[in-house]
Length: 430
Image 1 (cartoon, one colour):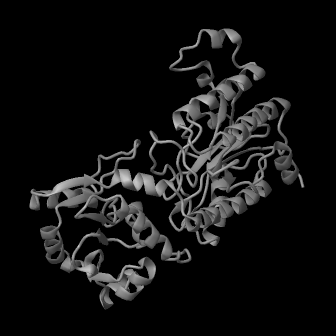
Image 2 (cartoon, helix red, strand yellow):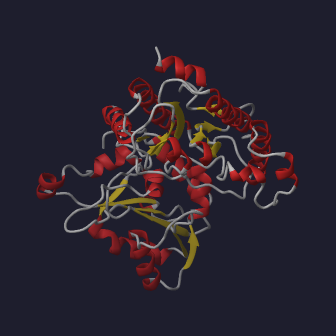
Image 3 (cartoon, helix red, strand yellow):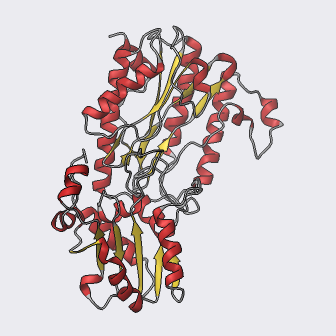
């Protein structure tokens, strides 16, 4: 792990919040992710399952967490099962957690090796009446690939058919969406790394640079700052490419007079940041580009103010649509007739702003959260309106990460990253 350890008090706090929501005399089980194969003997780099990470801080494959708050044996109310290391594994794969190190990372005192799992789990299930299983219920989840968690659920539901099974997901979506101050500190670190990379980019961009060269400059800054890299696949799109919402090829030369849309950000300690900035290849926006840019910036600033406790996200997105409609009318992209004749299910502004404005962010870039519940203080969201005009080869999107406060405007974790058009021009020409 490249990152500095996070204080185990975070994970103790997170487990306390989870067990408060459990039914009586039930246990809950959380598994690490698999190391996913590519082909031959190649694999993807290991990425820990965010739920076991959130509850334990254990960032290692083949780990299992069991929570059983009503267990008569106090030792077994929190249990970690880890892969036992040896000299051979240490030589070939590197260091693995010792039991003492696992306690220091998680605050969990009872740690067993994985080969003891079935025996100990049998005694726990004999006492428990129900079991919480951890299914992926993110609204945009792709669940075609069977995971380690899927295999576990299939095996043990068959082995213990008499138990009542509950879902961990609703609890995890609630507790993960409210960020602890320690989590906000880590997210701020990811945003600070992203900030440094953007300043590097502003000094690097010039006509005829290639999109992938910009990507390389960003990655350099990430790695030297102890980040594993991009929190998500980066979008570096110049000119017409900026109008493709999920453009990830990053293989085009940037031409003088174009605007580059850069949607990228760093991860740090498995926490994501998510930023979008747009810069002129030549160092100066045209009047038209700046007008569109300032309209997007206005919507972003006003939308940020709407993220307050008690608001429903569906209502929030409708209000942002009204803000965007006014800007598109001002820019001449739509007119009053378009608005009068619009389909309420696909308003006129959607022609130029077709995606949502905000999503939860945290351990995942599109983090878990309950969309049918009101916004609460401590929730973390992106704010990312955009205007895309293919006929002008111009796409502008601006995005920051914010934390909802009990009162007043959200805390902007990216408030120091340059965003005003004139500021970006001044830096590029300084």
